[in-house]
Length: 128
Image (tube, rainbow, N blue to C red; front, side, top):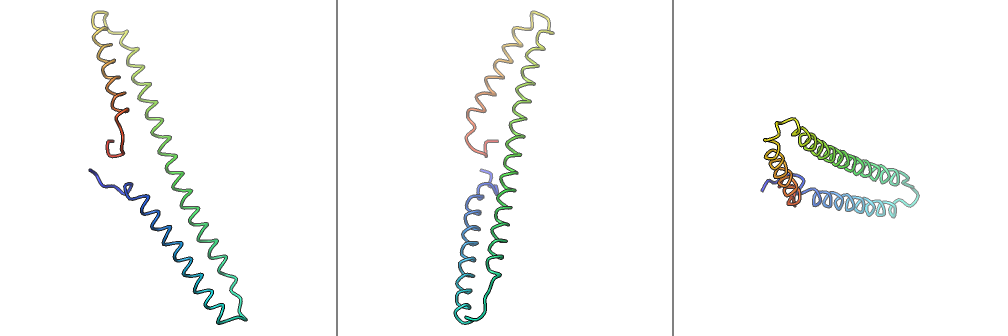
């Protein structure tokens, strides 16, 4: 079994997100404590810092989804290219002499059946 960063993506994301929430809560508690001590002073910067942190988190999530969409599109394009190549090769069997066409078409059918079986049995990322 190959261990990749992908296996730990969700726990890492959840851990970092939880750590971010804890840090924000800790900062809020410190801010409330200081606000009780310094009643005459106002601290308007806390909202700006929170906004910046959440904006960066949103940007990180946007880049993650963008990368996932790009990988999905590339995978779909490779699948279409493979299907077109198999179809073209199957049609080119007509250029082979007649007595060899039957055996070659059977070989293509077996190859296509094996490809379909392979794609149907893929269940995890490690199978790639």
